[in-house]
Image (cartoon, rainbow, N blue to C red; front, side, top):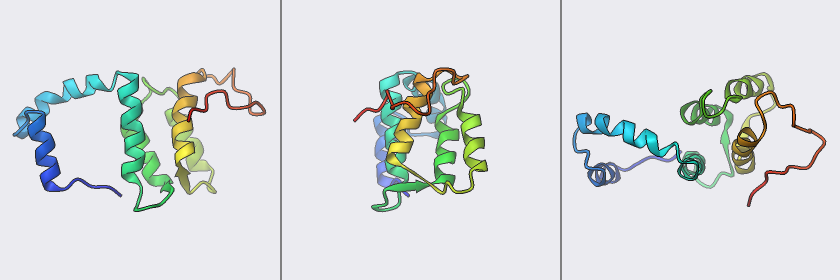
Length: 130
């Protein structure tokens, strides 16, 4: 799993002009506003997956994925997130999430209505992006 070196952390904080915890707290609303931009959010979402992989693994453990989803997604930006996490917890055979599953879940949740009325489990995936 990824981590930030102390010097990297300090460099990032300096770049944001936050050299104290108080300044970092004051900066949080601005940082949260960035997440409203779909392109920025998609980049953060992809970065979170890559950052969380161990070494050269092609997947992340389900526990890690669920933890990240709980941090990145909520009922307002992903109405199906809690149902999806509950589904994954019930399906005992799901142990890991690969990059395609990670990316496609976000696409799916952004393009299929909450009630899933337009979802066709026999249909081709219309939202696959390379």
